[in-house]
Image (cartoon, rainbow over the protein chains, first blue to last red):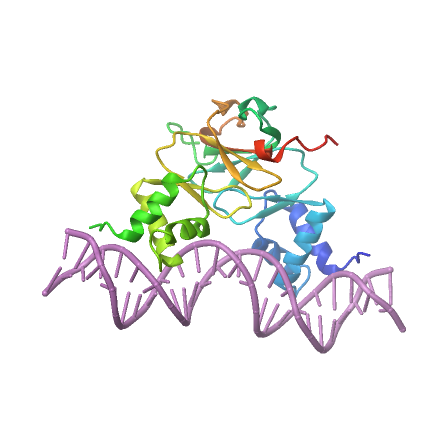
Length: 128
Length: 128
DNA sequence: TTGTATGCAAAGCGTTTGCAGTGAT
DNA sequence: ATCACTGCAAACGCTTTGCATACAA
């Protein structure tokens, strides 16, 4: 039976209100403003619980520590800027990729990460 | 100035001879058969060095520890079996994905991981 | 009251680093 | 004889867990 604690609300709210996937440490810092004394262990325990409940999604980019975002977001992908390292949501999807798998392999899902230059870091020739 | 040690050869050979990307621990176990007494620290040091030299490539799948494979392999992707967790190379590629990025974002590269059921693990999971 | 959730600190796990000894050149 | 490389163990950063207490139900 799950209880609705001050800490759990603070953790969930921090992630829902963020505009991008957050690291556990970032969740801690934001949630502590609402729930002083909050410990990192509680953040990890709740992140895990909220993911299991289906409220959160884990964003695991290659070579990066896991980040967390609201699960309400539909199937989507991510774009990491090679200049500023920030991660953005990409709501487009290449669609069915089962044609890429070798014979005998069955594709059930996929993960895609795009790398490049984000809007803010400017095009190779344009400085906006 | 680099030296050609017994350990380094054993580590490189273990990876070149493997049919799939290996975890550092797997590299250790295989290389120890040729270089008894080999320590895990030496494996890590050489993996790093060989990646820097361009001989190896790091395979970083979401939520998985880094694996290593020969760099000679061209641009390709990976397939992870959701049953046995093993990782396989996929030499197909969806091609240009710049259409997926929002306006103002420039795609320079991409990473793709397929998930599903491998040849050895049999039929795909029942559709839910 | 009851038992889950919490905070703290210790433990785990994969990876890195300091150091003195080893061995390739 | 050099000096990069090695093995060992300690240190690290992130995450998990044990335990006594706090608090939602």
